[in-house]
Image (cartoon, rainbow, N blue to C red; front, side, top):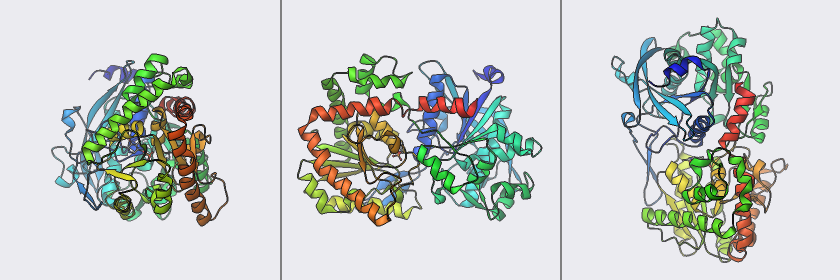
Length: 558
Ligand SMILES: *Cc1c(COP(=O)(O)O)cnc(C)c1O
């Protein structure tokens, strides 16, 4: 394989992630975590950061979402064929699972930057001759199966990953755990370094991505003992991973010298949960070129050459004439409306104020907040037409998330003579790219402080789409009222009861929609375009993954 020789000479960062969202055709992602990993890889390739990535091949995918007329989610398998996209390596390593040797192979996909840099991504696969039928399926379903299945997957990712990189001769400077799923890699390193915690810590970097307890892996020790065995003395594992259950976040915290949250607020929230640890903050970013639509790419190429390699140049957006910004936006919007109408027969039009909301359907994201009070929504819509586009999958076991989808379908029926509402099936990367560039306003209503960062609003900003969002995650850092967008609800440190907070949020949501957003869109296009430009100049110039990777480089990797 090309690059093998270089591998041996140059020290690499090994970036481990359960999800990797490189393409809609490679079904190894469920949401923002995978998009972030892919954008980190793309920026590393652009910037020539010596990095390799490791993930699982998840050959049966996450799932393909179908929705009935009533908004009931049906999950279909989402198989994909890695041989269409990448090369299978001959190298093989083994991991021990329930006392058996399980063979692990890897596929390699090389992300190539137009600037010449490359980053190999290794997709681990246990579908190897000689493995028991059950073991062949360990790398089949992303976030599928039970606790035992997840432990096995994480053994393959963490331990199998370390062994595979060694087998491939990659010289590693730092191991970066993108979320706790890969924390077994640090256990494998302990085993290799005479159980010396300090030397393992020096090699490891950990990024935590969620403040939600339920989203952090915790495993029953009896199960861990059965499946993992005594890779290191169990006593030590329990000392590092927690007494009662194996907490992968805690394990990663104890075995990393650099730990970060994905936004400034998230750092503080993480510190509250784990007070005896030091947390840094590296705010997420998105890959500017990938998430900028055709029409805006052309515009930036014309007026801000070099923006792809230096997205901070987007701060010069004011040199672009207003009418060209508007034209670029309308082009993207018309493309989106055509796409939505062809998929859903929705009858949307090019002129109405179009609001988008798309993300994983899970309770804290509060997809239905806009429908809390239908009368207030109708009243706002009398100021000027609005049309709403939704999308998002709920995890098959997330019944609350499925309920949200159902409720949107109910609201759609009730509102049909007042506000057009569309819910698109099977949210993915291409659909996200169309949505975040083609709507006028990007809505986000998470329940604070649960949105660690959020990245879709950054994508919107790259396309001059204006954010209207609860002050949580990245938006706390990006928001300037009436300049870069609008806030929904109080500032994050406001000391309010949940009821008061919700009341404030609803007042802002409906009040600003009726008296600020809709009137501005229909009656003051010049001011609207100024806010579009501010989104580009003040948000996209900062909330990009080039800046993010420079931060990792100087603070965590070097
Ligand atoms: C960007 C993206 C996400 C993350 O969206 P958030 O609003 O940050 O949660 C999820 N899924 C897809 C397909 C995306 O492109």
